[in-house]
Image (cartoon, rainbow, N blue to C red; front, side, top):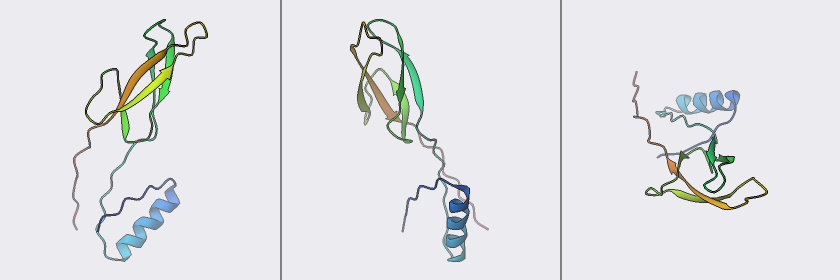
Length: 102
């Protein structure tokens, strides 16, 4: 059985780990970053724009569309421009999985 759980506090995490270990389960931990912000220049006027990733999985920000990328249309913050900029969020490569056994 595989279960993915998102834990946001230290106490919740420690309680979860203790519960699984006391139950005789093996645990695999994947640590992901929270939502990220990236800066880019408007394609039309050059003003700096900040964009937030849609979640903690799609963290690679590019101008070119890659396989499985999420497209975002971002309006320029410059009131004299306000044109649309298209950018893509892709999944970051996963780190290798380490298995620890006692």
